[in-house]
Length: 254
Length: 347
Image 1 (cartoon, chains in turn purple, blue):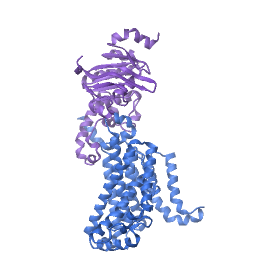
Image 2 (cartoon, rainbow over the protein chains, first blue to last red):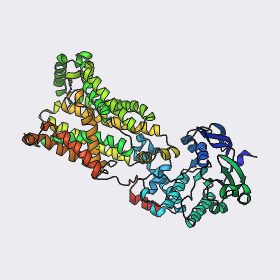
Image 3 (tube, rainbow over the protein chains, first blue to last red):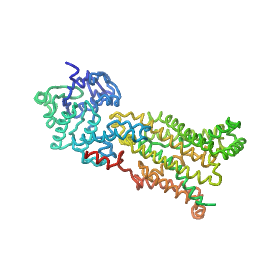
Image 4 (cartoon, one colour):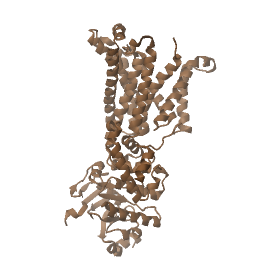
């Protein structure tokens, strides 16, 4: 296995809370410019796994490599700087900020230093570039016409796309999408996944898709890991995975 | 000669000083979401700088006592009197010492802000609020009972950088304060309508998300506490120069923390223009109460001195119940004008 082909590699990653082993020796490899899906029923440990990878939690043991670099235990903002960004299962917009501001807030500007903020000409150029970039992204995810609405006025599906837009805005190499179609009706879910597919092509990013609705998501993904009770139980291409009796057992029961 | 009625000057001074202090509070509370219940700490810092430093520097220059004895009441009024007669004839020195003190007050204010940011990293919400509140009270009590800095319970007189303007002293002082307050308003407007203001509001809305998007919230909080404290300290120094005296007991948590909170809440938390409006309304009403409370004495069953406090307290409760967003609520902010953004989209 050539490590250059993989953007994210975890080795035996483990995290427990008290007696509960939420993530149990999980080893996965996410190929560059792919949509890799991490699926499993509720409580399988998918979100915790992403939290450990992105530095929200420290792992008890194991290693996380991002783009060939050991990022185990780094704080979230360091991991972000390297180009690994996550979205949230339940969208958390900056409520009172407009859609545009939400996307802009995801990007870094020199004008965030108060001493520089005072001198407008030192950041206004960057700001204009950022706004143009933000609109390109908002166009791709269908949010442009809501640009000046405060985020609290958006609907559930739009908020999901706002999450994706913010992640794209930072020029991430790898975006972990935590249940992007959770709670969204099937028609719109397909649209979201089509957006994701387009975005993968247009922005040269990799997606780690955390989902439990296999029926809708499978046609869009390149590779699948199935988690259950903290461990990876099955992996393979979508076609292999749907036929695997273990997967059927997990989802439908024995 | 009375060009402007004294009550108007009094209102303008109160408005100016409280505008500066309340804007600094709004930056920390309204924009950054920090529970700043210790505003008085930075205001007192500025007052201490103005009360203790320019007089001593001048005393040192002119061979007068400048050590701990400067602050003792037997010496203080004589030393300050002598210095004031010198300043009266020397506008350049007066202006230099005035500006130097204000800059120093802001620098030391920022240092105090930096120190308060240390617990702010570990504590949040109510716990941080309590800690900040206690810090303000501690500094007030120390400087009230420890005489060598600003004379403890007797306070000190403060050198008067406006003395050279003679009969126009109160006009010049008042409009200098007002001018500086309006400049502060423009500065804060610029700060909050910038990427810095945006990231503060984003942090206020969700610390978790802004962390995930690569911001170091410890750094953001530290910057903000420093900027806020520097500005509040400027307010304290100006007030001290205006009144010409400095005593720690002036700087209570009621007058320099809770009042600015009330002004901010009335005007509109997170909206600088709202804050300006809130300060103006409150200061006018407060002044009218002070002027006319004597007339009300027969009708209230307590000492009318407390009317001011009762009024502010009642206002806080009523605002919190009926209009928590304030008279002029927060609005979406554009770092560059809306029109310009629309042009950018079309291009």
